[in-house]
Image (cartoon, rainbow, N blue to C red; front, side):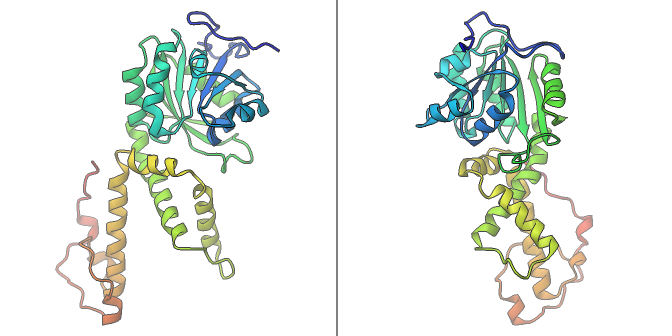
Length: 306
């Protein structure tokens, strides 16, 4: 079977209205790692798929999933271009595909952060290209049993998006959450940033107990297992490229130090407040007398996240 290759100005384009036929729409996946392959498995029944990745062995992987391996230019000339490359390389990838994107084409990213990728796409891609930023709130591990019912965040950036929203809801049966890049990153700083941060710390503490466990501990271990296999690039992006993640981590660590100090000194938790870390010998040196002059924690103003 000969697959239709889009031309610079031709092609069917991505449907503009819900209910239109997707069958002749070409989708170019740029980046064919674990998530690019996950995308291919779930879009193969709906679109004419092509993919590009500079990694060795990529072509065999693509063919095994029924995807046509192509060069970057050909992938960039598709009706829809899905950016599934690591966030760290996104700016370079967007710059490389920009000269080849067709008028009316739709460019979609799947990065786990949104403020920075949206700024890059908006500033770099030509004005005749439509842009929709997305964040599938799942990965290859959590999508092992299928993606129906899972969540995806969608941030419309440039051009209509109702057809894509309809496809995600009706064809892929995803729960679509429309949001803005800023609102997404504020929530993701806790939802993802804090989760991955805690999982990273716990996994580095060594193997978790397996015999004397409780139901709550088992759920914690399950949550760690769902994210600990993510690539270092994913962890780095979640923690350093979300403008709100550092503030959430710092508040968490400050409150952890406060809680530890309160437990070691016998301080009433409601009468203590975050402060600088102290030597960790308080528990061994005896309990200190609580400082009753401190203001209740609930009356303090939280530090603003910058």
